[in-house]
Length: 531
Image (cartoon, rainbow, N blue to C red; front, side, top):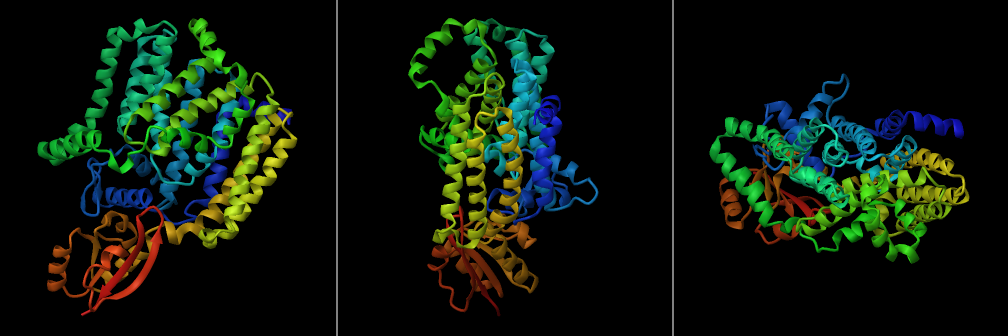
């Protein structure tokens, strides 16, 4: 095991890439695209390639300015690989984004002073997080978003905290600006608060007041403005004013009802997504924790890597908790910093109590998953849930037995998590297709549209059906408009929440599909009328 560990420490990036590819390439397109991000992103990307919507994305025949195009441009580059096409390119995008994240982690580890052993350990910790494993099998832009964010944080830290050349600040601001073009303003906010908080804490805050900060912010704005210029050139000023400034900036800043959560939201979400490493809490010296603030303050000018990463994770947590709009995956930059922090700690000591806690969390999660397999809700994926749960129970028991073996237990866990990840993707997740994807109702729309029916989405967003329907779907949001359309139209096929459709006079219509779509607001139905 020592020889294998030496290879990991010497080549942590290559080992990380191998682990990522081992658990993703064999199971590309192993399940359907799910509601709602996956089916929407697939349709957006298809429109980008087919119709050339490179600047302002398009969904269901209309402009879709909700997201900048950088992530989708990455998918277009991956699509150039021979033999790669839709929908494989969507899953491959997650794997490649995770690889980018490894390089960003290395940049941050180097900037804050995590040694080679600590970085190698941090990589294995990050790739063994249950939340990270799931993201490798899910189509989202967050991995790329956080990779650019963490990379930007690393270079900003080199300038503000380490006092290195101003060029590093400019690189950092450029990367954060690019991260904003992946998903939004958190790409600039979170790296800045992490770096500036540590800088101020260590008594080096004067560096923030230099002209470099102003120039760097202008550079970041210039990167972001490149998309704005493209929008204005393609769609015009009125579109930019109304759709981008009005809807995407002002409206989202003042009305976040869709993701409005209480302040304590991340207090629950972070420990869950940090599993099984939440078990490290068992190793903390709780009796001495009250004495930590005074000790940290006394040594604030000698911050080490653990202190820097802890401050960064804490201020990111508080910043996210202070925002009205909250989404679970937003804690990913915190998880990255915590992974490097854990790596730095484990590199210097064995911590058998910590490993006992991690093993206990693996077993606990495995027990919950195996138990859930026998519930009525899990009928469609009972076998997959039981196998994945039982595997974790065995793994946790083995890790508990090896808890004093240091890096050996980490190697065993990392290898086992690849196997578990493959089981998750190949056995468990596909069983959730029919209740988590809009594919079946969407294919009904497409099939009947081919036969001459008009496809209509009633009081629901048609973009969640467009990809699998392979066409645009008419959107109608009120009963009177639908009634008028039905009076004038011939063959029609309608999809929507069943409770909404049952309030409409659908005399002459036939129910052809009814199913619950998890996360979509209940049961959806498809009705058709032939004339």
